[in-house]
Length: 128
Image 1 (tube, rainbow, N blue to C red):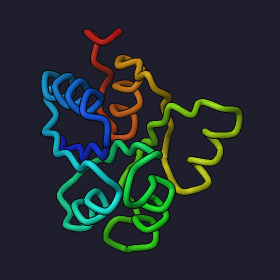
Image 2: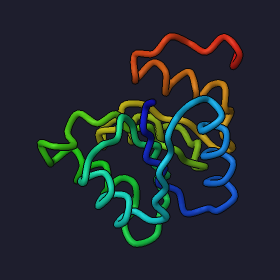
Image 3: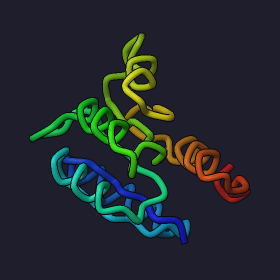
Image 4: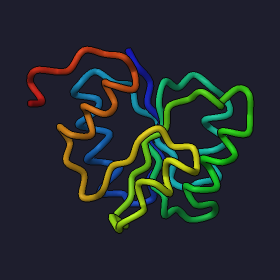
């Protein structure tokens, strides 16, 4: 079962995403700020990180750069999640080191497709 680290400070977003991902067969761990997310990712065992970019303690941009700077987490797939869907935000996330980008509010089937692609899993026909 793939393990996802969800780093999200908004309780409603955490609850919705973690429950929907669990129903799809993912094991989800939660961090509520950037510092905690960085520490959990560094401990290892995750297949992918869903990372809110506007976090307390340490923003997602900084978390991404730090994960990419460490050999143990350099190849860990990261999907940036942000409500700041402005022109250039996707490019900014990719330049920081994220593998993909998704805007909030989350379109779950679209996000699930990005997760499956990064994990090399076949698409879930029930999410179409």
